[in-house]
Image 1 (tube, rainbow, N blue to C red):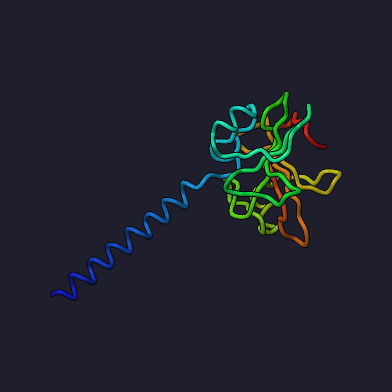
Image 2: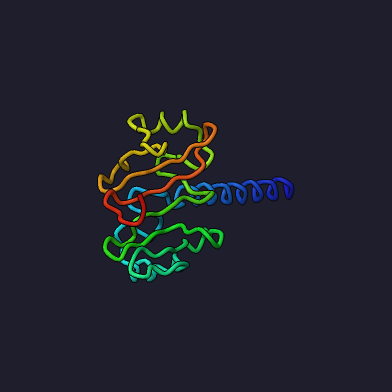
Length: 163
């Protein structure tokens, strides 16, 4: 009887943990269609900083400033977020562990990328680009090496931070 109760308690506890893990996975922010977590495309630097989710790394000196998402720090010479003085948050770049709402992540195959976004096209730089589903004011850009996504980000169509 005691073994049955202990077994039932362990089973219930494991189901709770598995359920909590699955719920956490479902609520994890996606990169898109409007940003990542509380950081949204178009926010001013002040608004982005007020979220508590970004840290400034590079002053803009009149141009775009460079930031990192606190949960995803980049090496010293790289940034994860560009903020334009005119457009606000102009671009957010993916880090390991991020996905698009459609499930594309670093390491996804180009075959899967094309299956998920059948209208995706390569630009003259070789990046795969497509309008973000659900946000016609932004686009995704995916860098692919040896058949796998090695970098990607979301940016405003009219961003003024990079080509």
